[in-house]
Image 1 (cartoon, rainbow, N blue to C red):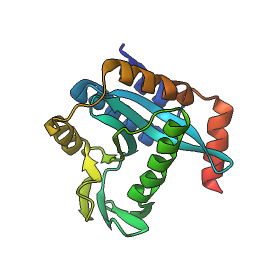
Image 2: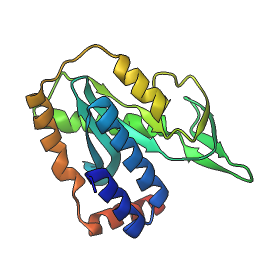
Image 3: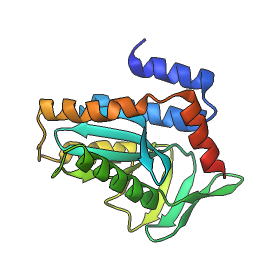
Image 4: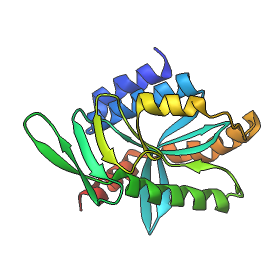
Length: 195
């Protein structure tokens, strides 16, 4: 069983948020295998007196990717300027806080964290990646929101490579320890979201 398969198995056994976990595992596995990207999931960075969770941070020769991942099986409708988007299913619909707005904050937090740690002048991207089963009917989001397949294709079309393997390893190491937090910290984060 490889790392991604083990992680998928564990998410089914223990996670209260199985759908999100499964989506993140599938996305991170695709980014590792199809984009040659180092991926750290569930990174907790200090923000405003508590911690914010970033779904994934990817690091590759292209730069740093602050990734908000969504795993929905419905039609996603919205505009980049809308505070909420809707997700329409066969028999129901739900609201989703605009993940582009959410990820803009995450990008700023990551950028600040990197500056504090002496890492400056790097390309930082903040894509929102929906797994391929979502149908995206969004406006003005071309550069920000992708299905997984669209992101992999766009990523692999980029020719600019700026980071060396040593740079990548150093940056990954900064974030790796922030992805291994205690169950108590995760519970605190989830409870803050519910308030």
